Image 1 (cartoon, helix red, strand yellow):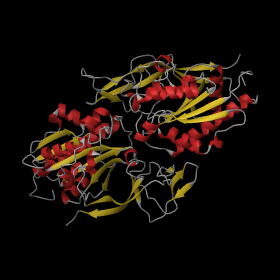
Image 2 (image 1 turned 90 degrees about the vertical axis):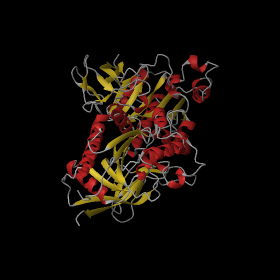
Image 3 (image 1 turned 180 degrees about the vertical axis):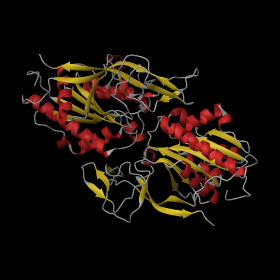
Image 4 (image 1 turned 60 degrees about the vertical axis):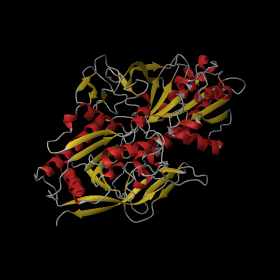
Length: 295
Length: 295
């Protein structure tokens, strides 16, 4: 317990922010039907299927990516009238402001990349760091990825406390029972941690954590017409969180030519994520850091 | 060479029939830009990106599944006016009828299921059986799946000769360089086989082939409201082409209850295919057969 004053009054468990990431969507549907699963004695838990129209359509979004709609500028923009803009404003009313504001938000995502069980932090609040360290201690497969959200455009950025859970690899539009149960276990661990914090119970938190901090983004090679010119190299595919060194194969052109990586040794994540083709992201390069939680 | 009279005059290599199956789409784009790769001396090869609008949108289809639009009834239905209906009629004009009719069609697909390299036959024409046997001999990872298309609604059913190539597992909307190159090698082997047939060259074809014939389709357990009530069981996930026996785990409910398989021993394929959730298909059960090519 790193902060004796902090008290969580309301937590939100969100899924289906991207409508074709089914694990989160079906988990929150399960929790909505059996709320006792996510209730704890010392705080309230709100469960939200964030993009029901996209979920019904089996798509990431209907008009634009909901998880890029939560900047204050966008929330206050009267001309932002897409379905997702309207949905973001409604969710902000429900969870991001006023008396019902959530003190803690966990947003459940999945990825086609081989990211296992990843906790994504969007700030370095000590509470979030301690929580992530706790989760990595009790679930040894957990990795911690830090992706600063300076514009606070992500849904979970409405609350300073919280994280995203990102599990993979899993195709869009499918369920994977093993990842479903692992994600569920992570949600329960997070809620238990909040409960322990509120009840001033001490949980075993390591003295430090390994954090992968996003430092650069690489796009795919493109033709002059802006079309894809290469794929993730087979030797790099699925090697999220493995070191990428100068000279290692990076891309493979459609004609079979290898394009090597040039740069300092870094750790790629989100390798070959389906939803990031349109964003111009082939992978995110991270720096591996050991962060002390002492003092 | 099992048929001395048969002569292929025109072959078609089709990809992007489903717009989010990127391997086929990018292969035909490559072939369109470098047609010499798919030309052979004894026949013409047409290359087609079948659903360009869906490909541009990153979706399987725009209005309806193009690969269910090719029945004669539908092609002749003046009221069938969706984008895909119109596209099917145009493709039928180009490849399915008249002087330019393709004698052989290979349609390139991919799946989220762990189907490796699969050749899908929709009839038992001896030429197709011999071709499939040849491919399984020179590419040992190849499996042969038979899915009768009595309505001839599939694109490739426009021609009696031909097959689909179905590779996986791969998420929708992504490329996988290893599967891309393996699919490309299969296309080249198919074209080489057609060339050998035309030139009366004898290629090594085994005396028999192992065929997995679709015999039943299983849907997911559903609630009374028609919603998903369970997932593919983790013990079954990715076990395409492995025997499924009575008592084996089949589904897992969201509450963690295992639903076992009850029935004769069969071989499932298309386990947990993303595009089949909306079709009510959790998996296809096949009977494994040894088919003799002698006599």
